[in-house]
Length: 270
Length: 251
Ligand code: HEM
Ligand code: SF4
Ligand code: FES
Image (tube, rainbow over all chains, first blue to last red; front, side, top):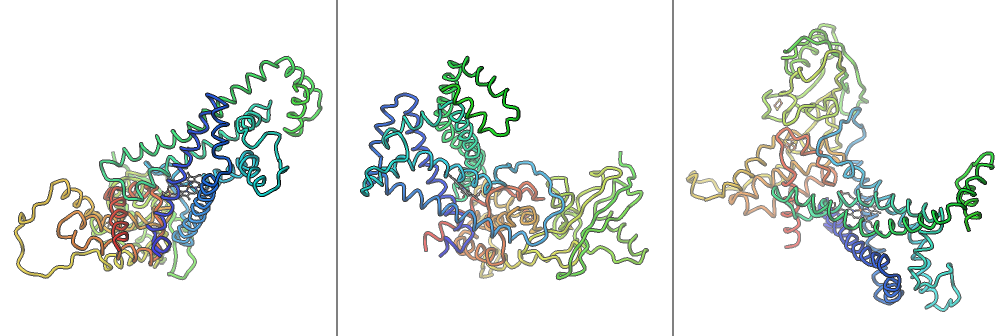
Protein backbone atom coordinates (compact mmCIF):
# COMPACT_ATOMS: atom_id res chain seq x y z
CA UNK A 1 0.00 0.00 0.00
CA UNK A 2 1.69 3.18 -1.17
CA UNK A 3 0.18 5.28 1.66
CA UNK A 4 2.34 3.25 4.02
CA UNK A 5 5.22 2.14 1.85
CA UNK A 6 6.25 5.30 0.03
CA UNK A 7 7.64 8.36 1.75
CA UNK A 8 5.35 10.77 -0.10
CA UNK A 9 2.36 8.52 0.62
CA UNK A 10 3.19 8.57 4.34
CA UNK A 11 3.52 12.33 4.19
CA UNK A 12 0.13 12.55 2.49
CA UNK A 13 -1.48 10.68 5.40
CA UNK A 14 0.23 13.09 7.83
CA UNK A 15 -0.97 16.13 5.92
CA UNK A 16 -4.56 15.01 5.32
CA UNK A 17 -5.05 13.87 8.92
CA UNK A 18 -3.44 17.10 10.14
CA UNK A 19 -5.53 19.34 7.93
CA UNK A 20 -8.72 17.49 8.89
CA UNK A 21 -7.84 18.19 12.54
CA UNK A 22 -7.27 21.84 11.65
CA UNK A 23 -10.77 22.06 10.16
CA UNK A 24 -12.21 20.43 13.27
CA UNK A 25 -10.37 22.94 15.46
CA UNK A 26 -11.75 25.81 13.39
CA UNK A 27 -15.25 24.48 13.94
CA UNK A 28 -14.64 23.87 17.64
CA UNK A 29 -13.07 27.30 18.10
CA UNK A 30 -15.91 29.07 16.32
CA UNK A 31 -18.35 27.28 18.64
CA UNK A 32 -16.43 28.37 21.72
CA UNK A 33 -16.50 32.02 20.75
CA UNK A 34 -20.27 31.89 21.37
CA UNK A 35 -19.38 31.79 25.08
CA UNK A 36 -18.07 35.32 24.99
CA UNK A 37 -21.37 36.59 23.65
CA UNK A 38 -23.97 34.44 25.32
CA UNK A 39 -23.81 31.52 27.71
CA UNK A 40 -27.28 30.43 26.61
CA UNK A 41 -26.20 30.21 23.00
CA UNK A 42 -23.24 28.07 24.00
CA UNK A 43 -25.36 25.78 26.12
CA UNK A 44 -27.79 25.45 23.24
CA UNK A 45 -24.88 24.18 21.11
CA UNK A 46 -23.83 21.79 23.89
CA UNK A 47 -27.33 20.42 24.05
CA UNK A 48 -27.61 20.18 20.29
CA UNK A 49 -24.35 18.19 19.93
CA UNK A 50 -24.32 16.36 23.24
CA UNK A 51 -24.25 12.63 22.60
CA UNK A 52 -26.29 12.54 19.42
CA UNK A 53 -25.36 9.93 16.90
CA UNK A 54 -23.69 12.47 14.60
CA UNK A 55 -21.68 13.93 17.47
CA UNK A 56 -20.59 10.41 18.46
CA UNK A 57 -19.63 9.47 14.90
CA UNK A 58 -17.70 12.75 14.69
CA UNK A 59 -15.91 12.06 17.96
CA UNK A 60 -14.93 8.56 16.86
CA UNK A 61 -13.70 9.96 13.56
CA UNK A 62 -11.61 12.55 15.38
CA UNK A 63 -10.16 9.97 17.73
CA UNK A 64 -9.23 7.92 14.66
CA UNK A 65 -7.56 10.93 13.05
CA UNK A 66 -5.55 11.74 16.16
CA UNK A 67 -4.41 8.13 16.49
CA UNK A 68 -3.50 7.97 12.79
CA UNK A 69 -1.62 11.28 12.93
CA UNK A 70 0.18 10.27 16.12
CA UNK A 71 1.15 6.78 14.93
CA UNK A 72 2.40 8.14 11.60
CA UNK A 73 4.31 10.89 13.41
CA UNK A 74 6.17 8.27 15.45
CA UNK A 75 6.69 6.02 12.42
CA UNK A 76 8.09 8.87 10.31
CA UNK A 77 10.31 10.10 13.11
CA UNK A 78 11.81 6.66 13.74
CA UNK A 79 12.49 6.19 10.02
CA UNK A 80 14.04 9.64 9.78
CA UNK A 81 16.31 9.04 12.76
CA UNK A 82 17.48 5.80 11.18
CA UNK A 83 18.07 7.54 7.86
CA UNK A 84 20.58 9.87 9.54
CA UNK A 85 22.85 6.91 10.24
CA UNK A 86 24.59 6.03 13.47
CA UNK A 87 27.10 8.88 13.77
CA UNK A 88 25.75 12.34 14.60
CA UNK A 89 27.39 15.56 13.49
CA UNK A 90 29.70 17.01 16.13
CA UNK A 91 28.91 20.55 15.01
CA UNK A 92 25.56 21.70 13.69
CA UNK A 93 24.96 25.30 12.79
CA UNK A 94 21.80 27.34 12.63
CA UNK A 95 20.64 27.81 9.06
CA UNK A 96 18.93 30.86 7.71
CA UNK A 97 15.38 30.18 6.57
CA UNK A 98 14.90 27.03 8.65
CA UNK A 99 12.13 27.67 11.16
CA UNK A 100 12.58 26.35 14.68
CA UNK A 101 9.11 24.80 14.75
CA UNK A 102 9.78 22.77 11.61
CA UNK A 103 12.56 20.92 13.43
CA UNK A 104 10.53 20.33 16.59
CA UNK A 105 7.19 19.15 15.25
CA UNK A 106 7.23 15.93 17.27
CA UNK A 107 7.95 17.68 20.57
CA UNK A 108 5.27 20.27 19.84
CA UNK A 109 2.92 17.40 18.97
CA UNK A 110 3.63 15.74 22.32
CA UNK A 111 2.82 18.98 24.15
CA UNK A 112 -0.41 19.24 22.16
CA UNK A 113 -1.46 15.67 22.92
CA UNK A 114 -0.49 15.96 26.60
CA UNK A 115 -2.79 18.91 27.07
CA UNK A 116 -5.41 17.16 24.97
CA UNK A 117 -5.63 14.48 27.66
CA UNK A 118 -6.03 17.14 30.35
CA UNK A 119 -8.67 18.85 28.23
CA UNK A 120 -10.63 15.62 27.79
CA UNK A 121 -10.61 15.11 31.56
CA UNK A 122 -11.70 18.71 32.12
CA UNK A 123 -14.58 18.73 29.68
CA UNK A 124 -15.29 15.70 27.53
CA UNK A 125 -15.41 13.33 30.51
CA UNK A 126 -17.87 15.62 32.27
CA UNK A 127 -20.03 16.27 29.22
CA UNK A 128 -20.24 13.80 26.37
CA UNK A 129 -18.93 10.83 28.34
CA UNK A 130 -21.42 11.49 31.12
CA UNK A 131 -24.22 11.62 28.57
CA UNK A 132 -23.07 8.37 27.03
CA UNK A 133 -23.17 6.76 30.48
CA UNK A 134 -26.69 8.07 30.97
CA UNK A 135 -27.79 6.64 27.65
CA UNK A 136 -26.22 3.32 28.58
CA UNK A 137 -28.41 3.22 31.68
CA UNK A 138 -26.12 4.55 34.41
CA UNK A 139 -28.54 7.39 35.13
CA UNK A 140 -26.91 8.66 38.28
CA UNK A 141 -23.39 8.63 36.81
CA UNK A 142 -21.91 12.03 37.57
CA UNK A 143 -18.40 13.40 37.85
CA UNK A 144 -19.29 17.04 38.08
CA UNK A 145 -21.71 19.33 39.86
CA UNK A 146 -22.78 20.67 36.47
CA UNK A 147 -25.29 19.05 34.15
CA UNK A 148 -23.60 17.63 31.05
CA UNK A 149 -25.38 20.18 28.92
CA UNK A 150 -24.32 23.13 31.08
CA UNK A 151 -21.05 23.61 29.22
CA UNK A 152 -20.94 27.29 30.03
CA UNK A 153 -21.16 26.66 33.77
CA UNK A 154 -18.39 24.09 33.54
CA UNK A 155 -16.09 26.36 31.54
CA UNK A 156 -16.71 29.30 33.82
CA UNK A 157 -16.04 27.23 36.93
CA UNK A 158 -12.80 25.84 35.53
CA UNK A 159 -11.41 29.15 34.34
CA UNK A 160 -12.62 31.62 36.94
CA UNK A 161 -12.26 29.84 40.30
CA UNK A 162 -9.75 32.01 42.18
CA UNK A 163 -6.13 30.97 41.59
CA UNK A 164 -6.78 27.49 40.10
CA UNK A 165 -8.87 29.15 37.40
CA UNK A 166 -5.98 31.45 36.52
CA UNK A 167 -3.54 28.52 36.64
CA UNK A 168 -5.78 26.69 34.16
CA UNK A 169 -5.96 29.76 31.93
CA UNK A 170 -2.17 29.92 31.79
CA UNK A 171 -1.91 26.15 31.14
CA UNK A 172 -4.37 26.43 28.28
CA UNK A 173 -2.42 29.37 26.89
CA UNK A 174 0.79 27.30 26.93
CA UNK A 175 -1.10 24.64 25.02
CA UNK A 176 -2.27 27.20 22.48
CA UNK A 177 1.26 28.54 21.98
CA UNK A 178 2.52 25.00 21.23
CA UNK A 179 -0.40 24.46 18.87
CA UNK A 180 0.34 27.76 17.11
CA UNK A 181 3.91 26.71 16.41
CA UNK A 182 2.82 23.22 15.32
CA UNK A 183 0.31 24.66 12.90
CA UNK A 184 2.50 27.48 11.63
CA UNK A 185 4.70 24.82 10.08
CA UNK A 186 2.02 22.14 9.78
CA UNK A 187 -0.43 23.99 7.57
CA UNK A 188 2.00 25.20 4.92
CA UNK A 189 3.90 21.91 5.06
CA UNK A 190 0.70 19.97 4.47
CA UNK A 191 -0.18 22.09 1.44
CA UNK A 192 3.36 21.69 0.11
CA UNK A 193 3.20 17.92 0.64
CA UNK A 194 -0.06 17.75 -1.28
CA UNK A 195 1.63 19.57 -4.14
CA UNK A 196 -0.19 22.90 -3.79
CA UNK A 197 2.86 25.13 -4.10
CA UNK A 198 5.26 26.59 -6.61
CA UNK A 199 7.88 29.32 -6.87
CA UNK A 200 5.33 32.10 -7.01
CA UNK A 201 3.12 30.74 -4.26
CA UNK A 202 5.89 29.82 -1.82
CA UNK A 203 5.57 33.01 0.24
CA UNK A 204 1.78 33.00 -0.01
CA UNK A 205 1.46 29.39 1.15
CA UNK A 206 3.67 30.12 4.16
CA UNK A 207 1.54 33.17 4.87
CA UNK A 208 -1.60 31.02 4.70
CA UNK A 209 0.04 28.75 7.28
CA UNK A 210 0.74 31.59 9.69
CA UNK A 211 -2.70 33.14 9.20
CA UNK A 212 -4.42 29.76 9.61
CA UNK A 213 -2.50 28.99 12.79
CA UNK A 214 -3.29 32.44 14.16
CA UNK A 215 -6.99 32.13 13.32
CA UNK A 216 -7.36 28.70 14.96
CA UNK A 217 -5.38 29.63 18.06
CA UNK A 218 -6.96 33.10 18.21
CA UNK A 219 -10.50 31.68 18.38
CA UNK A 220 -9.57 29.62 21.43
CA UNK A 221 -7.41 32.29 23.03
CA UNK A 222 -10.19 34.89 22.95
CA UNK A 223 -12.27 32.72 25.27
CA UNK A 224 -9.36 32.01 27.62
CA UNK A 225 -8.45 35.70 27.84
CA UNK A 226 -12.09 36.57 28.42
CA UNK A 227 -12.28 34.29 31.45
CA UNK A 228 -8.81 35.18 32.63
CA UNK A 229 -9.90 38.82 32.71
CA UNK A 230 -13.18 37.85 34.36
CA UNK A 231 -11.40 35.77 37.01
CA UNK A 232 -8.84 38.45 37.76
CA UNK A 233 -11.67 40.98 37.99
CA UNK A 234 -13.37 38.83 40.61
CA UNK A 235 -10.11 38.48 42.48
CA UNK A 236 -9.57 42.22 42.54
CA UNK A 237 -13.08 42.72 43.84
CA UNK A 238 -12.02 40.58 46.73
CA UNK A 239 -8.69 42.34 47.08
CA UNK A 240 -8.94 42.95 50.83
CA UNK A 241 -9.49 39.25 51.36
CA UNK A 242 -6.48 38.51 49.16
CA UNK A 243 -4.29 40.86 51.18
CA UNK A 244 -5.40 38.96 54.23
CA UNK A 245 -4.59 35.70 52.47
CA UNK A 246 -1.11 36.91 51.63
CA UNK A 247 -0.58 37.84 55.27
CA UNK A 248 -1.64 34.35 56.29
CA UNK A 249 0.80 32.85 53.76
CA UNK A 250 3.61 35.02 55.08
CA UNK A 251 3.08 33.51 58.49
CA UNK A 252 3.72 30.05 57.01
CA UNK A 253 7.45 29.63 57.68
CA UNK A 254 8.32 27.68 54.58
CA UNK A 255 5.88 27.65 51.71
CA UNK A 256 6.96 24.42 50.17
CA UNK A 257 4.34 23.87 47.54
CA UNK A 258 1.98 25.75 45.29
CA UNK A 259 -0.80 23.71 46.82
CA UNK A 260 -0.33 25.33 50.23
CA UNK A 261 -0.54 28.79 48.71
CA UNK A 262 -3.58 27.97 46.64
CA UNK A 263 -5.36 26.28 49.54
CA UNK A 264 -4.74 29.21 51.85
CA UNK A 265 -5.92 31.74 49.33
CA UNK A 266 -8.97 29.68 48.57
CA UNK A 267 -10.00 29.20 52.16
CA UNK A 268 -9.61 32.87 52.97
CA UNK A 269 -11.19 34.22 49.82
CA UNK A 270 -14.11 31.86 49.61
CA UNK B 1 43.31 42.24 2.91
CA UNK B 2 44.21 38.58 2.96
CA UNK B 3 46.66 37.67 5.70
CA UNK B 4 48.45 34.57 6.85
CA UNK B 5 46.66 32.79 9.68
CA UNK B 6 47.38 29.99 12.16
CA UNK B 7 44.54 27.52 12.56
CA UNK B 8 43.63 24.21 14.11
CA UNK B 9 41.80 21.65 12.01
CA UNK B 10 39.66 19.02 13.73
CA UNK B 11 39.09 16.25 11.19
CA UNK B 12 37.07 13.03 11.23
CA UNK B 13 39.44 10.09 10.72
CA UNK B 14 38.00 6.69 9.90
CA UNK B 15 40.20 3.92 8.52
CA UNK B 16 37.45 2.17 6.55
CA UNK B 17 33.72 1.64 6.15
CA UNK B 18 33.49 -0.71 9.12
CA UNK B 19 36.07 0.98 11.37
CA UNK B 20 35.20 3.22 14.32
CA UNK B 21 35.84 6.86 13.48
CA UNK B 22 37.20 9.59 15.72
CA UNK B 23 38.31 13.22 15.56
CA UNK B 24 41.97 14.20 15.23
CA UNK B 25 43.15 17.78 15.66
CA UNK B 26 46.05 19.19 13.64
CA UNK B 27 47.78 22.53 13.84
CA UNK B 28 48.50 24.48 10.70
CA UNK B 29 50.70 27.57 10.68
CA UNK B 30 50.94 30.41 8.21
CA UNK B 31 48.02 29.58 5.91
CA UNK B 32 47.37 32.29 3.32
CA UNK B 33 43.75 33.46 3.40
CA UNK B 34 43.74 33.65 -0.38
CA UNK B 35 44.17 29.86 -0.49
CA UNK B 36 41.13 27.73 -1.20
CA UNK B 37 39.84 25.38 1.47
CA UNK B 38 40.97 22.30 -0.44
CA UNK B 39 44.44 23.82 -0.90
CA UNK B 40 44.57 24.14 2.88
CA UNK B 41 43.82 20.40 3.16
CA UNK B 42 46.48 19.70 0.51
CA UNK B 43 49.01 21.60 2.66
CA UNK B 44 47.85 19.67 5.72
CA UNK B 45 48.26 16.38 3.86
CA UNK B 46 51.81 17.31 2.78
CA UNK B 47 52.56 18.06 6.40
CA UNK B 48 51.11 14.66 7.44
CA UNK B 49 53.08 12.83 4.74
CA UNK B 50 56.31 14.54 5.82
CA UNK B 51 55.56 13.30 9.35
CA UNK B 52 55.02 9.77 7.93
CA UNK B 53 51.35 9.86 8.85
CA UNK B 54 48.37 8.74 6.80
CA UNK B 55 47.06 11.68 4.71
CA UNK B 56 43.37 12.59 4.96
CA UNK B 57 41.24 10.98 2.27
CA UNK B 58 38.77 13.41 0.69
CA UNK B 59 36.85 13.58 -2.57
CA UNK B 60 37.47 16.31 -5.11
CA UNK B 61 37.69 16.56 -8.86
CA UNK B 62 36.88 19.73 -10.78
CA UNK B 63 37.70 22.22 -8.00
CA UNK B 64 35.42 24.74 -9.68
CA UNK B 65 31.98 23.88 -8.35
CA UNK B 66 30.62 21.71 -11.13
CA UNK B 67 31.31 18.07 -10.33
CA UNK B 68 29.83 17.88 -6.84
CA UNK B 69 32.56 15.64 -5.43
CA UNK B 70 33.92 17.79 -2.59
CA UNK B 71 31.53 16.59 0.10
CA UNK B 72 32.60 18.05 3.43
CA UNK B 73 30.70 19.26 6.48
CA UNK B 74 32.64 22.31 7.63
CA UNK B 75 31.77 23.95 10.97
CA UNK B 76 28.26 22.53 10.86
CA UNK B 77 27.51 23.41 7.25
CA UNK B 78 27.77 21.20 4.18
CA UNK B 79 30.25 22.98 1.88
CA UNK B 80 31.20 25.36 4.69
CA UNK B 81 29.82 28.57 6.14
CA UNK B 82 29.55 30.52 2.88
CA UNK B 83 26.31 30.25 0.91
CA UNK B 84 25.71 29.05 -2.64
CA UNK B 85 29.17 27.57 -3.16
CA UNK B 86 30.83 24.17 -2.97
CA UNK B 87 33.71 23.36 -0.61
CA UNK B 88 36.21 23.74 -3.45
CA UNK B 89 34.99 27.31 -3.97
CA UNK B 90 35.40 28.16 -0.29
CA UNK B 91 38.34 30.35 0.68
CA UNK B 92 40.39 30.58 3.83
CA UNK B 93 39.42 34.25 4.20
CA UNK B 94 36.16 32.97 5.65
CA UNK B 95 38.14 31.86 8.73
CA UNK B 96 39.90 33.77 11.48
CA UNK B 97 43.34 33.51 12.99
CA UNK B 98 43.40 30.97 15.83
CA UNK B 99 40.10 29.37 14.79
CA UNK B 100 39.46 25.63 15.12
CA UNK B 101 37.76 24.33 11.98
CA UNK B 102 35.74 21.12 12.33
CA UNK B 103 35.53 18.98 9.20
CA UNK B 104 33.21 15.97 9.04
CA UNK B 105 32.05 13.66 6.25
CA UNK B 106 28.39 13.61 5.11
CA UNK B 107 26.58 11.60 7.77
CA UNK B 108 23.63 9.78 6.31
CA UNK B 109 22.79 6.10 6.31
CA UNK B 110 22.57 6.11 2.52
CA UNK B 111 26.04 7.71 2.19
CA UNK B 112 28.36 5.34 4.10
CA UNK B 113 31.86 6.59 4.85
CA UNK B 114 34.54 4.96 2.68
CA UNK B 115 37.49 6.54 4.44
CA UNK B 116 37.94 9.74 6.48
CA UNK B 117 35.95 12.44 4.66
CA UNK B 118 35.17 10.34 1.63
CA UNK B 119 31.65 8.95 1.39
CA UNK B 120 29.94 6.65 -1.07
CA UNK B 121 27.36 8.76 -2.91
CA UNK B 122 26.44 6.02 -5.35
CA UNK B 123 22.90 6.09 -3.94
CA UNK B 124 22.26 9.24 -5.99
CA UNK B 125 23.52 7.52 -9.14
CA UNK B 126 21.17 4.61 -8.48
CA UNK B 127 18.23 7.02 -8.19
CA UNK B 128 19.25 8.56 -11.54
CA UNK B 129 19.48 5.14 -13.14
CA UNK B 130 15.95 4.40 -11.93
CA UNK B 131 14.48 7.06 -14.21
CA UNK B 132 16.37 10.35 -14.28
CA UNK B 133 16.62 10.42 -18.06
CA UNK B 134 14.60 10.72 -21.25
CA UNK B 135 14.36 7.54 -23.34
CA UNK B 136 15.10 8.57 -26.91
CA UNK B 137 15.15 6.84 -30.22
CA UNK B 138 18.18 8.50 -31.70
CA UNK B 139 17.82 10.13 -35.07
CA UNK B 140 18.80 13.44 -36.58
CA UNK B 141 19.28 16.37 -34.22
CA UNK B 142 16.02 18.37 -34.21
CA UNK B 143 16.09 22.11 -34.76
CA UNK B 144 16.47 23.95 -31.46
CA UNK B 145 13.35 25.99 -32.03
CA UNK B 146 11.16 23.19 -33.40
CA UNK B 147 9.43 22.74 -30.03
CA UNK B 148 8.30 26.03 -28.49
CA UNK B 149 8.91 26.20 -24.72
CA UNK B 150 7.74 29.12 -22.56
CA UNK B 151 10.65 31.14 -21.21
CA UNK B 152 9.49 30.76 -17.59
CA UNK B 153 9.45 26.95 -17.91
CA UNK B 154 12.82 26.89 -19.62
CA UNK B 155 14.29 29.05 -16.82
CA UNK B 156 12.87 26.90 -14.06
CA UNK B 157 14.03 23.71 -15.75
CA UNK B 158 17.49 25.25 -16.14
CA UNK B 159 17.61 26.20 -12.45
CA UNK B 160 16.62 22.67 -11.46
CA UNK B 161 19.21 21.27 -13.85
CA UNK B 162 21.93 23.20 -12.06
CA UNK B 163 21.90 20.48 -9.36
CA UNK B 164 25.31 18.82 -9.33
CA UNK B 165 24.28 15.79 -7.28
CA UNK B 166 26.66 16.70 -4.46
CA UNK B 167 24.51 15.23 -1.68
CA UNK B 168 24.58 18.29 0.58
CA UNK B 169 20.78 18.26 0.73
CA UNK B 170 20.54 14.80 2.28
CA UNK B 171 23.59 15.52 4.44
CA UNK B 172 22.05 18.72 5.85
CA UNK B 173 18.58 17.29 6.38
CA UNK B 174 17.63 16.23 9.90
CA UNK B 175 15.54 13.50 8.26
CA UNK B 176 18.27 12.34 5.88
CA UNK B 177 15.88 13.01 3.01
CA UNK B 178 17.02 13.21 -0.62
CA UNK B 179 13.88 15.00 -1.79
CA UNK B 180 15.61 18.18 -3.01
CA UNK B 181 17.93 16.20 -5.28
CA UNK B 182 15.19 13.90 -6.59
CA UNK B 183 12.80 16.80 -7.09
CA UNK B 184 15.41 18.77 -9.04
CA UNK B 185 16.03 15.80 -11.31
CA UNK B 186 12.33 15.13 -11.80
CA UNK B 187 11.57 18.84 -12.37
CA UNK B 188 14.25 19.54 -14.95
CA UNK B 189 12.60 16.95 -17.19
CA UNK B 190 8.94 17.29 -16.19
CA UNK B 191 9.01 20.98 -17.10
CA UNK B 192 10.06 20.32 -20.68
CA UNK B 193 7.96 18.70 -23.43
CA UNK B 194 10.63 16.07 -24.13
CA UNK B 195 10.57 14.90 -20.52
CA UNK B 196 6.86 15.26 -19.87
CA UNK B 197 5.99 12.05 -21.73
CA UNK B 198 7.58 9.87 -19.08
CA UNK B 199 7.04 12.22 -16.15
CA UNK B 200 4.63 10.03 -14.18
CA UNK B 201 6.63 6.82 -14.54
CA UNK B 202 9.84 8.71 -13.74
CA UNK B 203 8.49 10.24 -10.53
CA UNK B 204 7.27 6.86 -9.31
CA UNK B 205 10.47 5.00 -10.19
CA UNK B 206 12.82 7.59 -8.69
CA UNK B 207 10.83 7.97 -5.47
CA UNK B 208 10.62 4.18 -5.10
CA UNK B 209 14.40 3.92 -5.49
CA UNK B 210 14.97 6.78 -3.05
CA UNK B 211 12.81 5.06 -0.42
CA UNK B 212 14.42 1.69 -1.05
CA UNK B 213 17.90 3.13 -0.46
CA UNK B 214 16.93 4.29 3.03
CA UNK B 215 16.59 8.06 2.69
CA UNK B 216 14.17 9.66 5.16
CA UNK B 217 10.74 11.27 4.84
CA UNK B 218 10.77 14.95 3.93
CA UNK B 219 9.10 17.21 6.52
CA UNK B 220 9.73 20.45 4.63
CA UNK B 221 12.19 21.99 7.09
CA UNK B 222 14.09 23.57 4.20
CA UNK B 223 17.61 22.87 5.48
CA UNK B 224 18.40 21.35 2.06
CA UNK B 225 17.58 24.46 0.06
CA UNK B 226 19.34 26.64 2.63
CA UNK B 227 22.55 24.64 2.17
CA UNK B 228 22.36 23.72 -1.52
CA UNK B 229 25.41 25.11 -3.33
CA UNK B 230 23.29 25.67 -6.42
CA UNK B 231 20.33 27.22 -4.57
CA UNK B 232 17.87 24.66 -5.93
CA UNK B 233 14.41 25.75 -4.75
CA UNK B 234 12.03 23.94 -2.40
CA UNK B 235 9.31 24.59 -4.98
CA UNK B 236 10.71 21.61 -6.87
CA UNK B 237 9.70 19.37 -3.97
CA UNK B 238 6.07 20.51 -4.33
CA UNK B 239 6.29 19.65 -8.02
CA UNK B 240 7.68 16.20 -7.27
CA UNK B 241 4.89 15.62 -4.71
CA UNK B 242 2.35 16.70 -7.31
CA UNK B 243 3.80 14.49 -10.05
CA UNK B 244 3.99 11.51 -7.71
CA UNK B 245 0.54 11.90 -6.17
CA UNK B 246 -1.14 12.44 -9.55
CA UNK B 247 0.61 9.39 -10.94
CA UNK B 248 -0.51 7.28 -7.97
CA UNK B 249 -4.09 8.54 -8.13
CA UNK B 250 -4.25 7.63 -11.81
CA UNK B 251 -3.16 4.04 -11.13
C1 HEM C 1 -4.95 18.24 17.22
C2 HEM C 1 -3.85 18.57 16.98
C3 HEM C 1 -2.98 18.51 15.74
C4 HEM C 1 -3.14 19.15 14.56
C5 HEM C 1 -4.28 20.04 14.17
C6 HEM C 1 -1.99 18.81 13.73
C7 HEM C 1 -1.77 19.26 12.46
C8 HEM C 1 -0.69 18.93 11.68
C9 HEM C 1 -0.48 19.29 10.32
C10 HEM C 1 -1.43 20.12 9.47
C11 HEM C 1 0.71 18.76 9.91
C12 HEM C 1 1.38 18.92 8.55
C13 HEM C 1 1.42 17.67 7.73
C14 HEM C 1 2.50 17.68 6.68
O1 HEM C 1 3.47 18.39 6.78
O2 HEM C 1 2.39 16.92 5.74
C15 HEM C 1 1.28 18.08 11.02
C16 HEM C 1 2.48 17.43 11.00
C17 HEM C 1 3.02 16.75 12.06
N1 HEM C 1 2.43 16.55 13.28
FE1 HEM C 1 0.63 17.28 13.86
N2 HEM C 1 -1.18 17.97 14.44
C18 HEM C 1 -1.75 17.76 15.67
C19 HEM C 1 -1.30 16.95 16.67
C20 HEM C 1 -0.09 16.27 16.64
C21 HEM C 1 0.32 15.34 17.62
C22 HEM C 1 -0.47 14.94 18.85
C23 HEM C 1 1.55 14.89 17.23
C24 HEM C 1 2.37 13.84 17.93
C25 HEM C 1 3.26 13.83 18.71
C26 HEM C 1 1.91 15.54 16.00
C27 HEM C 1 3.08 15.38 15.31
C28 HEM C 1 3.32 15.82 14.04
C29 HEM C 1 4.52 15.57 13.28
C30 HEM C 1 5.76 14.81 13.75
C31 HEM C 1 4.33 16.14 12.02
C32 HEM C 1 5.29 16.04 10.86
C33 HEM C 1 6.07 17.22 10.66
C34 HEM C 1 5.98 17.74 9.27
O3 HEM C 1 5.34 17.15 8.40
O4 HEM C 1 6.56 18.77 9.05
N3 HEM C 1 0.88 16.37 15.65
N4 HEM C 1 0.40 18.17 12.09
S1 SF4 D 1 19.90 19.69 -4.85
FE1 SF4 D 1 21.64 21.02 -4.30
S2 SF4 D 1 22.43 20.08 -2.43
FE2 SF4 D 1 21.14 18.54 -3.38
S3 SF4 D 1 22.51 17.32 -4.65
FE3 SF4 D 1 21.70 18.94 -5.98
S4 SF4 D 1 23.21 20.59 -5.84
FE4 SF4 D 1 23.64 19.22 -4.13
S1 FES E 1 35.54 19.49 -6.55
FE1 FES E 1 34.00 19.60 -8.11
S2 FES E 1 32.43 20.69 -7.11
FE2 FES E 1 34.04 20.79 -5.65
